[in-house]
Length: 264
View 1 (cartoon, rainbow, N blue to C red):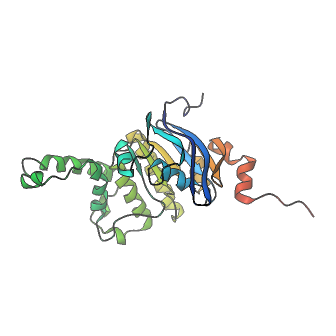
View 2: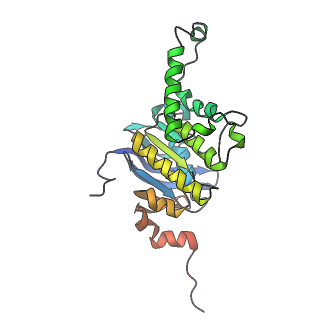
View 3: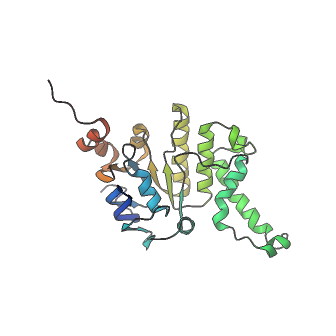
């Protein structure tokens, strides 16, 4: 039995559809992701990958079908409530707060656990200090895990893209997710930066026991770290299974490079 399929399901998308006016972005897509699995979501540009992630995270809920996480439906929940359920994500384009330090950006990952209270601020030493120390302790552990100590006080504006992506990963990890969604974490990176990011993703998955859903265009990354993948094209699922087998599917090859022309 495949190691991934022997684990309990953590995320189940059943016949998910989503459209925007005349564009049918997702067409009855179903997928099951299992605990502590690294699962890949691939397909050409515009195939519906980010739309599916946005449906899972509540930005654009499905108009048909349903999504369950750890046995509980996510339908119509707001993104912040889904985050509190244990789902965190990074974005295709770096979404850090410019003008703020690396440390401050990472600390923002703890916001879902914070409950602002005027009385707590007034009686900081007796009330809020312990909570702040606990948040700091968890952030420091993530900084150590992703080796960001040397840039912790730098503004995110001035560090290289590879490090910015790592900061965004750190911020997501500080939300203590059980499902981590990475939307093109290698985009714009050179080969060395990609290798570093793969290493840190694998380290985080092993250290924290995460389930990871990763959208990625770099097939070398997909085949190296993903146990299974789902391939989308024009909003529909065209292949699913072990990474190398799914990528070799004739429908997938056609989706990426088109049909071979008949010889003249």
